Length: 412
Image (cartoon, rainbow, N blue to C red; front, top):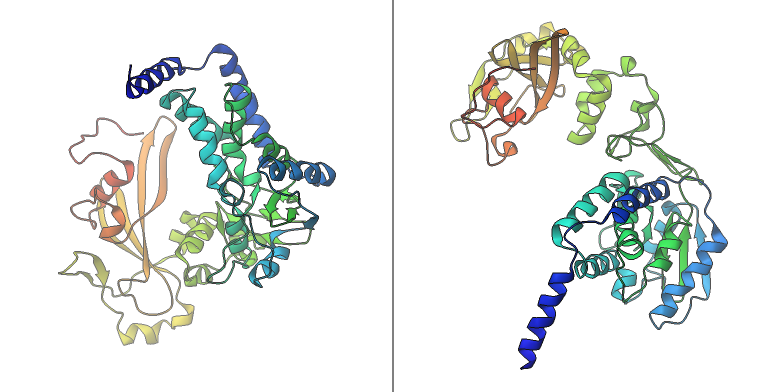
């Protein structure tokens, strides 16, 4: 038998031995492991410094490197930003599995593929992601706190609580699935369970304290409407609404007292929409004023909808600084409306308005209504763009994910 045939037989045997589904013991162990790593991801207790420092030696020796001679502790990423940006000699290793965050993740996945079928692993990964995936890492924290690295500098190459999702996957594969890793991941798991972040350097190791406050929404995004969403022991604070960093003034101010004119002046679209979710779309519509003299027009090139400028006479009658947000009904159908609300103090043009669907319906509890933000440009709709983006019914169907040929029998 040739070597090619022998390799083919070995591959066929390995394929036959790969699990097609989880056994009863694995099905019981998976939720417990996910919950364990969820607690680690959201832990806000002080770091276990001695345990973290002891565990940091193992990855070095396991990879044939000299153990670190110096341990540095930071209270937050903000303290490390100046050191990393100064071009000092505190640099990550050249070993891929140590210095690149996707290194051990790739090792965990490829090793598990030898023991489990692909669909099984995807189911496991989906569950670990739903339980313990934190959609913010070192760079996101620095950016949201206003201290992102300058151009040409990357954020610290760290492992930490934000890695809980794939570490839960690796933990399950190793301890419940019997997967053997060439590069041991257990030391890394112990380090992450002991501190907020772990930054391996050449002969040095930096650790970061855990945040003393984490607040999040049901999708694990940083979120709090009346206080800090993330806070570190050194006072570094992040205010966020559904994962979007917003100025502190919009969090400290009650929703009923937020000035809508200030909100609509925000240049960042994500920030503006996040604040509007706190204020409430209903209040925005109630405060909006009918468009005094706006003539709807359609661009002959792109088919997008916009409005002519307000006349000078209207500007004199209603001073610009006292005018509230202006709303225009683009189209109506079946009691629903497609609305546009002007942004800013200047006359409208095709770039300074936002669009909403105002939907009304009846269910067994009575009359209901809601307001949903929708795209304003044709290219923002994606490949399945409605034929007419100014048609309320077509935009409504796109928002609900209906095929163009679908017929409504009943709606709730």
